[in-house]
Image (cartoon, rainbow, N blue to C red; front, side, top):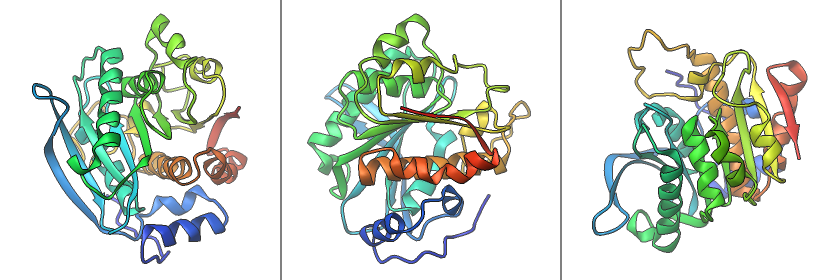
Length: 286
């Protein structure tokens, strides 16, 4: 498990934001943990209605000021635990994170609609979770079919500032109609196309009308877009810690770009050296 901590110093997330936005964007700086402590609250209950309960894990940046929130959804046959390190990592960089547990078999369109309702609940009543959430800067993120569910949530009007898709899967013929309705900025972080058969490589980029940036992480497999705090004993997993760290650093750059600036520019500039060196491939933006 990586333990390095950034050498950047900041008294609060606002100060860190100024330091980073005034400097040269570089995804490499996000490979280490950020400067903030994190409060973890696992297996909490989020009440969507009198009869509907959602199990979530909270990773709250230890800061008194309001900060953005990333809501992260797992993929098929996975759980919120598979993204525990990613959420922890984001919170060390001053962004609260919530890992959501929804049915691991889908249906994923329904999961996307539930995700939109979760975002709407937090937007309208942040005190139900934590009063330090900046509800104007909610970012949705999802892996595999969870990424497809995020796309559905955006199309359904989820009150989010943008989204990060972690090697998202395809929903077949149902997906393009949702993608064409997305009007928020999206960053797509793909695995290497040679090793990730879960989607049509052009489906998301072609169908989202505008405001999408895409890169693939060279040599990464689909499982590298997950990252547990405690490594699961899974002999079939193709994930390697080095590439998982690359994914989480790119996720951090993307989430901060969307939350802090409302656009793709900071993330895109931070990917430049990786694109030039070949560590990132399939780079495209519109």
